[in-house]
Image (tube, rainbow, N blue to C red; front, side):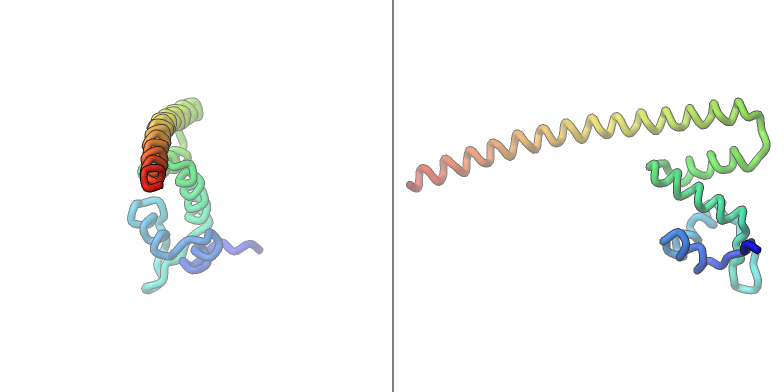
Length: 130
C-alpha cells in the first residue's frame, strides 16, 4: 500500500529541497500538515500541492501566484473559469519574461559595445608602447 503520510524529511529528500523551504510553503498557506506533538505530518494532498508548487516555481512564478493557481484547482469551481484564469496568469507571466528577455538582449548589446571599445583602447595602448 502506498504511503499516505510523509515527514518533512521524506518530502525534502523526495523533492531535493530543504526542510526550511517546506516550512516556508507552510507559512504561505500552500501546505497544511497535521501535527503529532512537534512533528509535522504531511498528507498526500500536501505532497501533490508541493509538487505543483515546485512546477509553478520552475516556470518562474511567485509563491503567491503558485498558491492562487493551486487553490483554484483545490476548490471546485467552473472549469471554464479555471482555465481562463490559468491562461491569463500564464500570458501575464509570459509577457513579463519577454520584457525581461528584451532587457537582457539590450544589456548584452551594450556590454558587447563596451567590451569592443575596451579591446580597441587596449590595442592602442599596446601599439603606443611599441
